[in-house]
Amino acid sequence: MGSDAPLLTVEELSVVFHGRGSDEVRAVDGVSFTLEEGRVTGLVGESGCGKSVTSLALMGLLPDRGVRVGGSAVMRLPEGPVNLLGLSARRMRDLRGSRLAMIFQDPLSSLNPVVPIGRQVTEILRRHRGMRGSAAEREAADLLYRVGIPDPRRRLREYPHQLSGGMRQRALIAMAVACRPRVMIADEPTTALDVTIQAQILELLKDLVTEEGTALLMITHDLGVVAGLCDDINVLYAGRAVERAPRAPLFAEPTHPYTVGLLGSIPRLDAPRGEPLTPIRGSVNDNIAWSQGCAFAPRCDHYTLECLQGPPVLAPVGAAAGVEGAAARTAATGRAAAADGGHVHRCVNPLRAGGASDRTAPEGPAAVGEDEEERG
Ligand SMILES: Nc1ncnc2c1ncn2[C@@H]1O[C@H](COP(=O)(O)OP(=O)(O)OP(=O)(O)O)[C@@H](O)[C@H]1O
Ligand code: SF4
Ligand SMILES: [Mg+2]
View 1 (cartoon, rainbow, N blue to C red):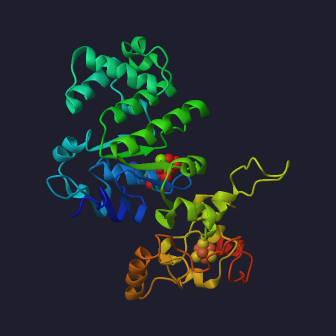
View 2: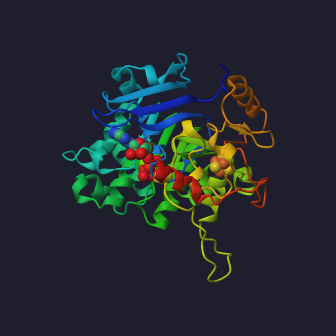
């Protein structure tokens, strides 16, 4: 593998929870993406679409029982490539830190409650960067300052419970950045923070990517964060990527109705006064199973009967898309995607620039949901 190969290559990742006596939950259903040196890759989508489960699978932090993980996540290391999904708990622990770090969505469960913040940060600097004594303390204070924690020297002596929720989140971000990891996963790192601190944290993450060449996986439902930070974007819906593109084409020419809906539901400063937002109808719970067709169909204004004839395949924008059925067709579209500047979508009636579909839905879209209810 050459040095310009991705630092992490995720292929067909799937995570299925199968608790005793309950139905299976297909939380992640064949997701593929790469993380490249010095680039930010975004995973975006509504609550419950599988963003956190994807990150926990990559970090080896899913429970041992009641879960099946499939696919591969190959990380490029100096000693050779390794599949993170097949590593022992011990090997995974060795990798976490300077190779692979994560900022969690829930900061409380990630800090040690009985150890002062300062010791937790300096321990990381000692282990991963060989720093000791006053040099480590200075660097720890500087890191806290850079994540917007005022009076950092005093805060270093305090315990996690003495910090507010937002400050704990910032301390965790400081600890993840302190490792200067090759690959960093940030799961909604700024959701709980006010906008000025959010901007400061995003700046810090950007510095880490440009100065250290870290490959960052940014998980968020905030398209403003995506627009400001991500180079490549994966839009997830019900556990599958429904559109993937570099930032510019995704924002300029989104083609999947779900992506268009997400973009249409963000408030715009230049919109005429009083113009209503256009939220996506229904909720993520209104899905059908991918095995039956497009999971988004019950919420989609552009569906046709073809959408219900099997799961749509991921196809390059501009090429004919279709539903799964011929394995050869899926493989062909997968290969073609690589040659298409990376803009792919999973939709049989994609939208053109401007939001118009090639075809018109024969019936009201609610009919899909109603059929489902009648069947259930
Ligand atoms: N331990 C578990 N057992 C069963 N189902 C789970 C478990 N953890 C997550 N899920 C399910 O997996 C799906 C994906 O959850 P996930 O936490 O990845 O969503 P998310 O995209 O991160 O959402 P949010 O934006 O709310 O954080 C959800 O339907 C969730 O209910
Ligand atoms: S047009 Fe069909 S395939 Fe495309 S998002 Fe709508 S329901 Fe899914
Ligand atoms: Mg989450």
